[in-house]
Image (cartoon, rainbow, N blue to C red; front, top):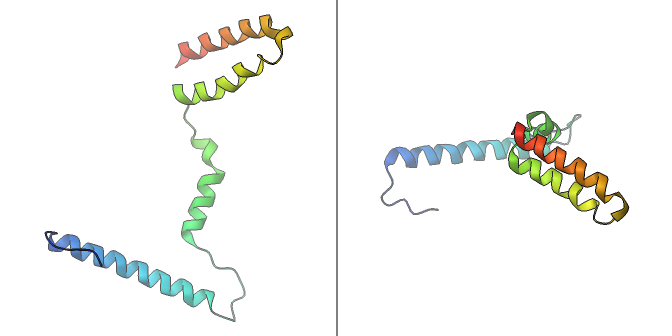
Length: 104
């Protein structure tokens, strides 16, 4: 257990209550998992939240200067391999960067 010297009693009580809630959830999950007569699957809320956040991350994406630069840099590096397209790509990339920097 942790060292509780110098910690207010309400903080200790809150920590013990959270630990008790975690233990109750753990016991309930183990009870459901070890039930031989279960017909469905066990839904764990933390896994559900993680899966939904992973699936819907693009709808909450916010374009910032850092994310824009991280998206543009690979595109800028591609044309170095293909020198015959350099002139056209340089103009297009310059226009794209100027337009993005003006918007942000």
